[in-house]
Amino acid sequence: MEISKRAQKLEPSVTLAAAAKANALKAQGKDILSLTVGEPDFTTPKNIQQAAIQAIESGKASYYTPSAGIPQLREAVVQHIETYYQLQYQPKNVIVTDGAKFALYLLFQAVLNLGDEVIIPVPYWVSYGEQVKLAEGVPVFITGAQEKEFKVTVEQLEAARTDKTKLLILNSPSNPTGMIYSEEELRSIGEWAVANNILIVADDIYGRLVYNGATFTPIASLSEAIRQQTIIINGVSKSYAMTGWRIGYAVGDDKIISAMNDIASQSTSNPTAVSQYAAVEALLGEQDTVETMRQAFEERLNTIYPQFAALPGFKLQKPHGAFYLFPNIKETMDLCGYTDVTKWVDDLLEEAQVALVTGAGFGAPENVRISYATDLATLEEAVKRIAAFIEKKSKN
Image 1 (cartoon, rainbow, N blue to C red):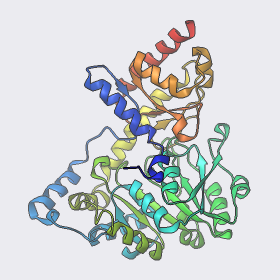
Image 2 (image 1 turned 90 degrees about the vertical axis):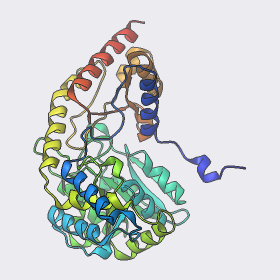
Image 3 (image 1 turned 120 degrees about the vertical axis):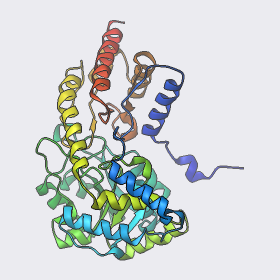
Image 4 (image 1 turned 90 degrees about the horizontal axis):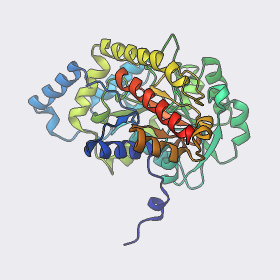
């Protein structure tokens, strides 16, 4: 049986591949330090766990739910957006999905036709381009320079725009760079999108994870016209340490949300019931644990950033959000005798037992992604091992 052409064209996720390789080596008994997956190392807060247990014990979690999510959770999303975005929506503007990744997938399937173009700033999260291609769209990549915090400008967007441009993906705070667009920058981009009737896909999954006085500005909050031109993508995985619960959501134009729901009803039927009841508590329950985790990430960033920045050849800027460092290591590779960042990462894993993610999968073949969503002891030991690896290779 021949595999479909669309499946053959897909590039595998470099983040999941790196994590899988690290886990396989751990299973062999090797002392692997994995800085790969964007996953908080905290367990889900107790109040959220208890809400799930109560849903199970009461029998509520035993049955199908509406494909767009239980009414309580859609209303919780509406309240959450009103609290943190100062925007008012109705439940009909919300769909709950099996993770934020599936919200993106449904959106592209719902709005893209063959040949429609989607502008994607580089570096990008690994699944954006592949999901666009699955919807028969065309990803159009534009590069944000590292010296400008990887941000793209309206001038770059306009140069990339054609009569086929339909969407712009905007991820702030960014995976993999941790950069944040300012309100002024977002307003310019939003007004450009409105003027050219381009839908903004605002991936806000890291919006509550910002550090050292930085501010997250939701682009949808900047004007009514921009709000109408924006689909918000978010979820509970990062801020609430719920990656395994698989609950995301999209908020926006009710016709688009309805189309996404139609597709979901013919694919997943509904998000896992027990996870939905847990997510209601996450969004509406006490929020102290979110701040506790945010402070822990901030402490890790402030502690390990100067240590990674001091590594020979590492060129990086201090991020303002998410939980990643994204250094350019071209000079490091030159010192070590490498021309391929993926080979450098592979050898680092094999020889120093430190797992990073190649920047090639993010459109940045001179960079690596380092997740600091793990404990400080692991991070500091990883720095020592990387330094020893560079020293060894540079002497060969």
